[in-house]
Structures are given as structure tokens and as C-alpha cells.
Image 1 (cartoon, rainbow, N blue to C red):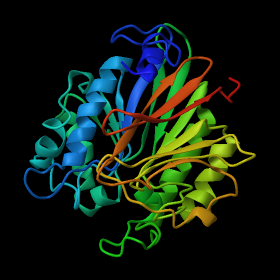
Image 2 (tube, rainbow, N blue to C red):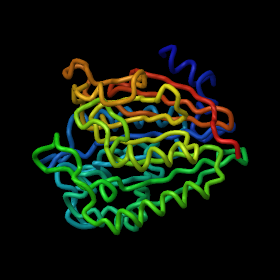
Image 3 (cartoon, helix red, strand yellow):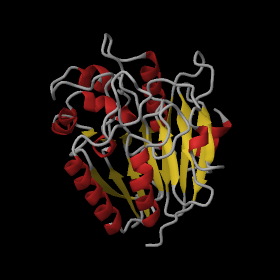
Length: 329
């Protein structure tokens, strides 16, 4: 057993080492951009490896649920609620017992190329898939405490528009429906303003800040970032970039985590000069693609701290970060 897992199981990193034991800590998994392929067997080696390691890690940490940050089905989403991709890319791949709890999910740009509403509807067919609307919020209480954790799940494609299907380097062109985007912006602000949770998170697909191929998302920098700061959001979780990043503005309070390596790794730091100076804390992407083909992360939250761990597709821990709560509620 590695020193890392010895520390986990003895409580040095988290206080929850055996499935079912809580000890005042909430633990969960997160993965993004894992959506398989349009051809048989409809999953990739990278996705399968990630699923296997997520199952192992989920069991070790006693994961309560999983968060999917979008691009759930490559390349063109799903056709309808009965599309075989729900089975072939999702249900039959993420089969570990520790992955059978709720999957809180949002749509990515590839999901919107298809019938995104079918992913909402699939909530009523699956015992674990949970996307009751394109955007929604969930409040979870840390076990054995009275401390609430709130997740605000948003649809960044509705806010920013969809990417070009072939010219993937182009930024989102703006919302398809300005009215739909404004309705969501209003909902986001009202939801954040009303939150009384000690830990408050926003989860989307497009990044606010990113050093990789797509770079920062302009409308999220202009409109979402001020809300994250104003309402003292603890962290913004997203995907879209096929790598792992941790960014924090040097004088900021919001942590930005990208977890988009569930399908593979893209080596890019094209936008390193387009994020605030000295804000990049970690980047996993400039590596040997033959030896490391993906990654995911897991999070543990107690009333006094949050720990974020990045893990590659072999189960090797590649990054660890700990922070204290910033909200006074």
C-alpha cells in the first residue's frame, strides 16, 4: 500500500476510509469529458481505465456520489432517452459498486450537439443518473454534522453558446437564445444570493480560467466570475479542457478546478498568458500520452477543511490541495 493511501485510510487526509463510515466528512468523485465513442464498443480504453480506478478510489474513500462536469457522450451526444449510448458508454462501463450512487451531471458542448433534453429525461429512467434540468442546485449535509454543502449546477452552453463542431479552437459564439441565457443568469444570481451553506460550489462545463487549448471563456470571466467573488463561492468545478488544472487568482478567494481528462489527455498550454499572473497552481497535461492517458479527482469536505485530490488512470495520486472555508454563515 502506498504512503498516500495509508495516510487516507488513517485519516491524515480524510476522516472517511471505510465505505459507510462518515466521521463528519463528505467525500465524492468528479470526472469530466469521459464520453466514449460513436463506434463500437462505444467506450475507449482511457474511459474504461478511468472507470476502473474511480471504482477502486470510490471504495477506499467511501464516496457518497459522483459529479460529471459534461461531455458525457462523444461526439454528438445522444438521440433520445432510449439511445443505446446510455448503456454502452455509461451504465456498462462505470460498473463498480462504489459508483452506483447518484451521479450529479451537467451537459457539455458535445452533449448539446445531440438531444441534451434526453439526458435530462434519463434522470427518470436511471437509478443513479441525476440531471433534473439543464441547471439546478442540490444541498447536501455533511454526515454527522449540521453543516450544509450546496452545489449549483449550471449549463454553460446555454450561457455562452456552443462550439463549432469542427473548428474546435474557436470560442463559443454567444448564446443561441439570449432570453434563455438571461433566465439562467438570473437564476444563478438568485440561487447564490440565497445560499446559507458553509461550502458553496458552482459546477459547469466551460472553464472560467484555463491555460489550455480553449482558454478562458469570455462571458464567464465577465459575468460568472464577479458572482463567484460576490457570493463567496468556495470553488468552481468544470471540464472542457482535456487535462487537469488548478487556478487561483493571487489575491482571490475562489478556487478554479478543471477535471476534463476522463477520456484522454490533450497537451496544451496555449493560453498560459491569458490567465491572471501567478494564478496557475497545477497543470496535468504536458505528459507522455502513452503512459498516462487520463485522470479524475475526488474531494473530501469537513466543517473545517476541503481536500481536492487528482488521480491518474493508473490510480497514482498526482496532486493534492487543502483549503479552509471562506464563507461565514
